[in-house]
Image 1 (cartoon, one colour):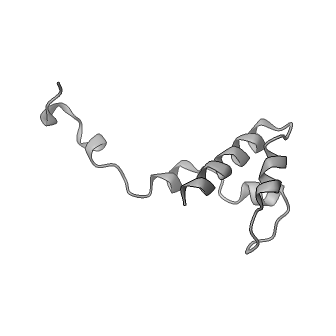
Image 2 (cartoon, one colour):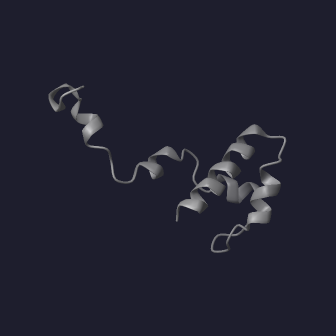
Length: 71
């Protein structure tokens, strides 16, 4: 068993908005799908984007689907 003294302070104090820091290109998927700001990205559009030939677009669409489930 690990005591609290052995755990680094960085691990104990995780940032509250860590997802915002994990997203490297905010708005990139919306630009690729040509959806204007203010309009919602539908699940059908995300499903189509997750079948893209571009691996980055596939990952972005899958991340968007995962984040949509969290809220």
